[in-house]
Amino acid sequence: MLGSAMAPVALAFAILNTLHGSPSDIGIVLAVRQVVLIVLLLFGGVWGDRLRRNRVMVGSNVVSGLSQAVAAALLLSGGAALWELAVLAAVNGASSAFFVPASTGVIPQTVPPTMLQEANAALRLGLNATTITGAAIGGVIVAATNPGIAILADAVSYGVAAVALALMHLPAGLRLEESSVVQELRDGWHDFWSRTWLWGIVVQFGVLNAAESGAVNVLGPNVAKQHLGGPAGWGLILTAQAVGLIVSGLLLLRWRPRRLLLVATFGAFAIALPCLALARPLALPAVLVFAFGAGCGAQIFGVLWGTAVQQEIPQERLSRISSYDALGSWVLMPIGFAIAGPVAAAIGDRATFLGAAATVIVASALVLLSRDVRTLERRPVGA
Image (tube, rainbow, N blue to C red; front, side, top):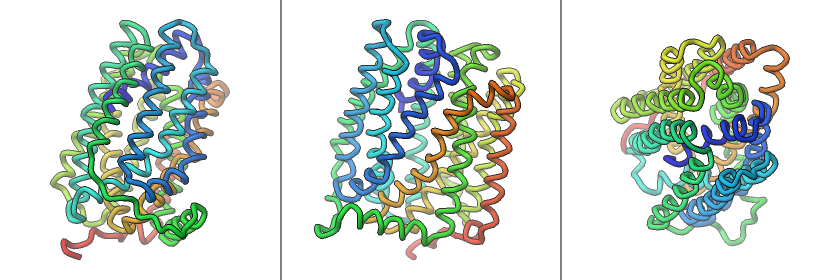
């Protein structure tokens, strides 16, 4: 995550400054990566249940590292083209489709059920601590040198991560030899669709992520370039959000709310805050405060959502369920990335940001209509 936190800053300003592109060009590259990830995600979930999950993660990191190394070489040579960055983003998305479900399934294999929330909070604390450093360093590197340097650092970080994951000792996958990939996908879909709280929140985040990610990731860097100090300012905004993730993560090491999904959904409302701050835009210190609040809310949702899923889903099907979760949550994001630039060109940045904020708020409010979301509770110790 130290390297990967640099990459969004580097990629955005490589397109804006080095390639003299537009926010719509940023959206195209992000959309390509997300489409490939979504297409392969369900297969990644199946193989995350079939194989040793850390081995799947190692393979994913190796491929991701190679794709970033090539992107860095192109940018440093001065010969990068937008289509080349899009192709490499697609490769990175393909490898991530196998990493995400496997990484979710690893957690219950390392800690007892009574410690799932603490494990999720501690894991996210570690990841977010490096995100704080990476976003800040990425902004400074891009401002002082070349975006390719930051992306090269990301490539190296994937190699280090692959070595660390290879040292884990996990049991073999739980595959039944007579089962097929199609059958395993059907079993995963049945488990997913039979739980109203599960698919309801996934639909919520499908809409929420498309609106918020499209507006912030596509339009945000350009707003920062014009009003908030460029790449260094954008790095600070990402860092403030990561600080919020850290602070609420520390809280969740001790705070154990009984109604997991109700509290998680309240946290999701705060994800609208950066859109509200960038709509005007506010002064940089105010934007940092809003980004901090969004980080707090996102972390509360993430830890409690992960704990609920790991509590309720059988371990042998967890990677498949998490792939359906990720698929539904991300499936609309390519559309959000692709249309954010054209929509802003038609109606203006401010209206686009406010529309995205309204979408986040409405989607989060609607999910509270589900009784399961309001009432699902943490299981007592020993249950």
